[in-house]
Structure formats: structure tokens, C-alpha cells
Length: 495
Image 1 (cartoon, rainbow, N blue to C red):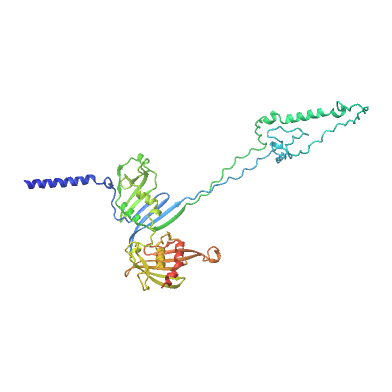
Image 2 (cartoon, rainbow, N blue to C red; image 1 turned 180 degrees about the vertical axis):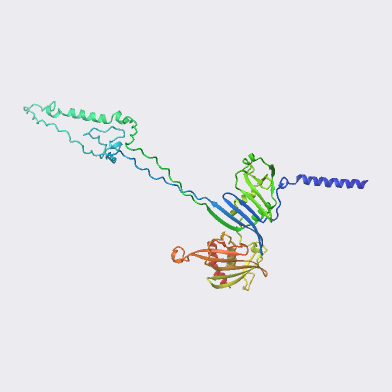
């Protein structure tokens, strides 16, 4: 009895522990997914849209299995704006005089503030003929346009009568009648002119002009309507083809699509609802092929909030909601799926390097380098294989190997891109014991002759590389390669 109770207690305890583990574990991403297909492994993945076509193709060689990515982009160049032809001049009536050129505005006289029509203060009425505005303070008076008024005749000077001796001399009480008769009239005329020029009406300006009546149409035959501007010439879209080796993200993408799973299965959706999901009238498709099995899907719009993607299975018409990651990877394939490594191995797996440098077609030398403590982080160092003391670090070799490690793929050379005239400049072979793990060949191509490039004494050059991993010729960064070339001579001649 005691044994049965103990056995039941043990089983109950194990069940409680198992239930606790199941209850508290994190939910898996595949718990709530729906399997859509299983095509493993995928031979090709093709994504087509109006702007691009991306194709992942599986390949195999002595280095192993890989995916090659081809991208074709279609770009519409901007349309050139068309300038309309100038409008023809209006036809004049028969026998009418040609229109005269506008008269230039007169220049205001010296000392007069500029204004409309050169008449002095802005808004002041035009002066009557023969008059001029008053001079500004501190400015010389301008010559009058009209002749001055005649001066009045000067009265003869009257000599005061002599006084008798002993009597005081007295000043005349008034000037002679002829000398002062015309002065009050001149002062009054000058004052009236100044008041007219600087009155409130002149400051406020003339009254607003009435709008002019539209000109009458010219006599003669009616004008023909203007011709419409010519349509801009049609510009053909520009296609660009690129191919590159897929990285680890491309391999993972092909794996995830081979076992495609959906977040939700919506079943068959009525045709009037397909437009709401972005599945009607779209040219974006996703095609998966494995052997003789092919499945095609129409890629629709995005869900609200989660940004998931609607897929329509063209084989049975079922609609699914999937995660947006695969579609985003294919849309940005150049940035997410391109492998920029020269080798698949790490430098820590290498213990020997053989360098062969050449200048043109003549070999200049060979050097073998050894790596010590390669498996110990931050403790590895390089020496010459011919050095007597293998325990001392060689700074020249370490720095050069560090620059060689920084080389990476700048871009892949297209199939139709010209590569003639390349010359081998450097070859490096990597060994792990007696096994050769890989190689890199650095090639140079002269773009311009040195005589035509004043800023570059050696001319313009492009640098390429070929390795066991890239499968195709790739482009390298010119500054990094030139830095390697400057120091490779010292490495070759080191003892």
C-alpha cells in the first residue's frame, strides 16, 4: 500500500512539473501559423513587380551550395519639360502705323528728390510749364526751364538834403517809392507757388486713375486659335541588370519560403473584396519552384497596424496573411541579400599565407608568412617563414595582413561590362596546414593614359578581384588596393 501511494505521489509530482513547464514557457512563433506549402529545397524564387524582378537560383560547385541573385530594375527617366513656342505678335489693321516705342522717363533735375515721372515728391501733381520745384536743403538750385521774369527798373537814388550845422542827422522814414513797389508782388507769387507744391492735395497724391477700357480688337480677318504644344517625345525605360552572390540571409530566405507558413488563412474571398485587400489589378507575383513543382502567389496590400502582407494562391484561390519579412528582403535585395565577403572562412582558421606580387608581366617576388596563436583571441601574430626567431612579432607583416583583411566586395561585375586589359598585380593563397583553403587575385585595368590625366601621375585605374568564394569577378576599393601595393614591396623584400 505504501509503495502504491509513493508511486502515485511521484507521478503526480512529475505531472505538476510538466504542467508548470508547459504553462510558463514562451509561446512559439509557429504555434498560431498555418502551413501553406512545403517545397524543400527550393530551386528558384522569383519576385516580379512593375519596377523590378528578383530571381534567386540555387547552385552547387566544389565550394558547396549557394544561391545566386539576379536583379533587373526598370527606371522611368524624368520627362523633359517642353517650352511652348513664343506667341506671334498681334496683327495690325491694314494701313495702320506701327506701334511706337515707349518714351523714356525724364531724369529729375539735380537736387530734386526722385518720384513718379521725375517730378519730385511721390504723389505730387506735375508742375505747370515754366516752373520748377523748390530746391532741397543743401542742394544747388537747378537752372530754370523758362527765362526769368524781367527785373523792375531801379529807381534813382535820392540824396538826402544837407542839414544845417548844429542839427542832428535823421534817417528817412521810408524808402523811395520806386525801389519797393515790386517786392511785395514777387513775394506773394513765390509764396503761392510753394503753397501749391506742398499743399495737402500734393502730399496725398493725385486721385486714383480710372481703369482703362480694353483695347478694341484690330480690324481685319479674325485670328486663328493657337496650336496646342507638341507632345514630349516618348522616352524608353532604362533597364539595369545586376547579379551577385547571395549571403546567409538569402539562404535563410529560401529556407523560410520552402516551408511557407501564414499567420491567418482567409479562405476564398469574393471577387468584390479582393480590391480592398490589394489583390485585384496588381502585377506583383511570387513564384516558388522545386523540381517540377511550382506555386505562384499574387502579392497584395498590407494589413492595417501590423504591416503584414496578403497572398493569393493562384492554384486554389485561397488568401493568406503572411509576415512582411520575405517581401521586404526581395524588394531590397541589393542591400539585404548581397554577399560582400571575399572568403567564406575566417582568418583565424589560417596558419600560412603565400604572397606573389608582380609588376606588369614580370614577377617581382614571393614571400611566405606564418600565423602564430591563431585560435587565441587578441594573441595571434604574423612572422616571416624565413625568420630565425619565430616568437617575435613583425609589425610590418601584421599591418599588411590587417589591410588585406579589410578588402571586401565593392560590387559585382556585370556580364556585359567590359573587362579587357586587366593585369595581375597580386595573388595571395591561404593554407590550413597542407590544405589550401582559398585564394585572392587582384587585377588592375588602366582607364586613361597618364599623359591625359594631370591629377593622377600613374593614370586612372580600376581594381578587380577573383576568389574561390565570389564565383565571379568583383570590384575593389581603389584606395585600399593602392595602399596594399605601396607596402607589398617591403613585405616581399623583408628578411
